[in-house]
Each structure stands twice: as structure tokens, then as C-alpha cells.
Image (cartoon, rainbow, N blue to C red; front, side, top):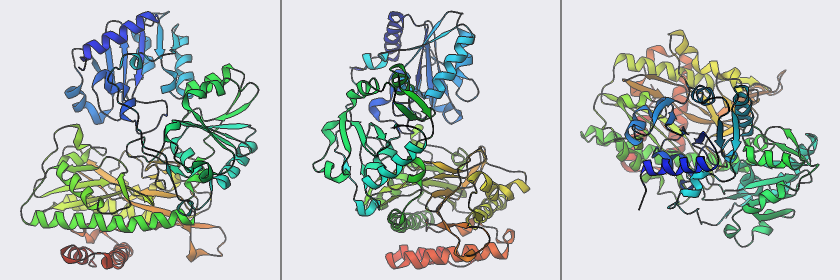
Length: 595
């Protein structure tokens, strides 16, 4: 029988007392530090009942506080007992500074170093010590000790990803990355990002929701040899020959012993994305840490021709599925049938499910009716799904994991009549989307330098949006892939051919409506400028789905922008029409008419 939140807190405080701790920090993270956390590792949820995707709790001897961001101010009150927890802002209230205010000098603050990156751990340790407090890394997480009904780990076998789809063998990839490790002055690299070692070995998995990866950690040596620490029960027949020579598989429980035997070894590790425990353990036993970015990230981001072919193919099929959903939605609205956000999200997935290569969503669908769309990361599962209403805007941001690629698309739709002001705002967003899509830029250009292309028209009218303009996307891997991105914040990674990114400017008016237009694009050489003074790149749109022309104020568009809009829709029509039929085809023909 599940124990109450009060009983869970009591158990944590008993463990704190045994370890002589005055505070214990519980982040919404697991030892892999990824965006998605398997149910088995949802420690914050077990302790507090909070199901949001970001947050942290701090347990003191006499009180407890949960820190959440602006997305969850309503949800946290519904899920987390206010008699047990105070609520604080995750973004506005720095947790270490808050702790220093709460605790007396000499207090001991406990953490599980597996759940924090090394950079955070070292910064927190220094800040606490300057105030006379001590950061203590616990050997056993008190939540793990007391979580009696903890879900079992995923049991599905590792999937051997076809080399023809991957485009290169594991041995080729490992040899290339090994050379870069040697160049960085290291003997071995800690590969902790799940999508990185899966890409290296041409494997995929079912261990994490929305992300087709295997749980584990890898060590990649400068000679290209590799050790993967994972659940050995998941190894399928033939994996040794699939990955090629030089790969050893060990149980995850052996990782500590291997890290402890690295005296004198120069270990390349990312302090911002690999957990503190692994790096501190290696250092404690004599390894020399070399701070650096994941050496797999950049090569993985530059898709080869086989990967790009898969991304192109899956986007065409995804375009058919989403267009069939949009056709169905228009028909239902015309008949006065209005649904709630959950029904709409499920209906959209039902069209994708008809594709035999479809595996799962690439993230939780953002199905947002009316004012809910003003919350750019809205999730209808966090409360009661809202009902769509006539004469409003509906925003749907969704994506899919297919065996040959990953998709992510947002469309903003007119439900009945919309206002002149709403059309104006959609058109300003569209103008920015077009400007970025049409950008030509020299080799060495970063996404930060291109970000203003998408914002310029909003800025001219005194508007902006608070999220990035574009994130990288993997090949049947993470829908949020680094190191490339397009945004205001500092990012010094140049955009390179083969990289896939989103182009998703938006606008959000609180308590009123939200707008976002998102396509995925691939960086390629600019053929029109071949032989020019500089090596020039451009974007090629992968997403082929109609953009709702009912929301566009044509008077605000230039002739060039009108031509882009019509050319895009002509390409959508030519590509998708042969794959559609009946009323869905008729809808596509109407939706792609020239404006």
C-alpha cells in the first residue's frame, strides 16, 4: 500500500538524521542527467507527488520546500501538499543562496552526486563553504533506500540499428572520435549522454520515454575501443558482430571499479553534462580530469547522406499524417464538433500510428486551445484538458519517433473567425519564419548570429518571445539535440552542413492566445552561390505541412514573402498529394492554394 507524503518525508528525515545532515536536495533528475527521466528514476515525484518536468525539493529538519518554474505554479498546488511544502520559484530563487539563508554556520547539506553535473556540484560546494556550510555527497540516496514500490527498470532488449540507415559503421565512428580524444590530450573520454553512445554503437533502445535510447554509460578510448556499462540482460544476439571489434560490455555495477582503476589516466569529461559522482570518483583514484565537451556531439549533429535521407522520408510520411489530422479537424469544426485538448492530441497520434515505422511521440504533444497556447510549454496532462471554443486559435506542437528519423512541427490554426489583431501577430511570426528559412550565411556562422532574422518583425512592433528560435534534432534520437541551436543566448557552435534544426518563432499574449510556426530545416551548401568568395550555407525545409492561410494578413507580406508562401505550399502539394486521397486530399488542395 502506498505511503503518504508525510510518511515519505519522515523517512527522508530519519535518513538525514542518521547521516547527520541538516538538509537534503532532491532534483528532478537521474544519474544520466537527460531531459527525460524514466518512471523508475522519478525521485522528486516519489517524494512530493509533483509530476512536472523541472523542479527540485529541499528537505530541512523541520520544513520542506519545492522549487518550480512558471509553467507549474497551478499544477504544484494541485499535486503537492501545502501543509508539507512551501512553494518557491526555481528560476528566481537560487537554491544554494536560499539554503545559506535558512541554515546556521556549520550545517551539512546532503546531495546525491549522481544527480548533479560536476559544474553545479563544485559551484555549490564553494558557495556553501564560503558561508561556513558543508556539502556532503551521500553514498546511498535515502529515496532509493525507502522507495518500496519503485517501478522496475525497462526490460526491452537493445535494438540493433541498421548500418544502412546509420550510414557509417560503429568502428568508423569510434575511430574518428577516438582521434579527437587523442587531439584533446586525453587517453579516454567519458560518454555519458545516452544518445551519444547509442549513435556511436548504432544501437537504439526503449529505456526512456520519448527517447529511443539505452540506459548506461560508456568509456571511449583514444584508439577507438569502447566499454559500455549497461544492463547485460538487454544485449541481443549478434550485438558483438553488429558493433564491430573493440567493444566490451560490462554491467553498470562495474563502473565504479573501472573508474577507481584509472590512476594516471587522462579522462576527458563534460563538467556540465556528466554527473559529478563519476568524475569525482575517477579523480579521487588518481585520474586527471580534462574538461571538455562531449566529443560525440558535433559529429553526431552533422547528419550523413543516409541519415538525411531517413529524415527526409519520415518527414514526408509525417506530413501526410499531420495533414490528415488537420483535414479531420477542419471538417469537425465545420460541423460544430469541438473537442478537448486531450482528445485532439490522441486523434493526431492515431494518424501517425498507421505508419509501421512509427514508434512513439518525440515529446509530449502540446495541444493548446485558446489562452492555454500562451504558455509555450503547456501540457494538457498537467490539469483538466481545456475544451476548444469557436472563434479562437488552436496551437498544436507535436513530433514523432520513426525508425528512420525524428520529427517536430508546430501549426497554429484558426477555429472559426479570428481577429484582425490575431492575424497581424501570426503574420509577423510568419515573416520571421520566412526570413530565417531564406537566410544565406557564410561558413562559421552561429545560430546566435541568425536568431534576429526570426525576431526582427516582432521587434519592429514592440514584441518578442522568450524561448529559443531553434534547437537541434537527432536522427531517430533526441528531439532536442546539441550542440547547435538558434537563440539569443551565447552559443559559439557554427552551423554546419547536415545539421538539422527547428525554425520556430512565436508570440504569446498572456490569457489570450499563443502562436508558433515550426518547421525542421537542414543546413546545406548554398547551390545558388557556388563559387562565391565565401563558402555559403542555407536551410532546406524538411517539414512539409500546410500553414493556415486563414490566419495570414496578406497586406503585411512583401511580394517575396508571398512567393515563398506559395512556393512552399506548392512543394507541400506536389509531395503529399500522391500519398493522399478522398476528403483529406481535397482539404490539402484547398489548404495549399496560392494566396
